[in-house]
Length: 249
Image (cartoon, rainbow, N blue to C red):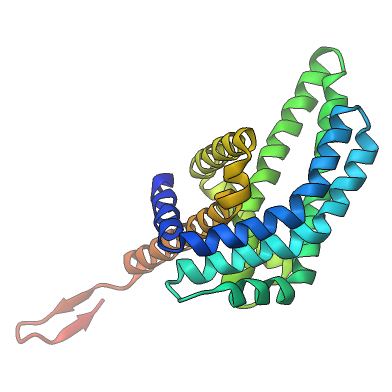
């Protein structure tokens, strides 16, 4: 079984190795992204769900490119490459369209799931319980996509949407306990950061980007190891003769 603490430790190591760089880039992310989402949260608390949803979608305009910039920076740091502010801002510009598509699409799906979850919660009887349970499973799956999808876009040689969704789904369903534990740990960190605000502004998103990158790389490395073991197990064995000649079976 994969150990979720391995990726956690590697992300923490990279965080401390490039602490100042991550803090500055995370602060740029916070200053450009947080205002709109703070307004959306205020509207949601005020009971204006549809306005909050609209402002949340508008918030993906800065959040998409900025988040992809952090993910690209995490990719470089996890790969051991020297990085700087130019790499971050270059990635923000280079992956702006990708960020809008990925995070805009993900946020739209997230809002629809929340809407359905709220509606199913008002239903009475076993139908409401079943539909609510299904919606919760879909929500967990949707949240788990955030761990793998941005990282896979940079790690795959030809990052087509179909291939990214397929690979992410296989990672989630192939290692469900590993993914759920990672998701729970990330959720706890995010909850603490929201309550304290300062960590969210200074390092949380950059740390989560590093964490997701190392988690994805860990899954890829494990899949390659299992593939090599399977190939070795099915490879034809060889028998040596009396003078060392190889006699294939």
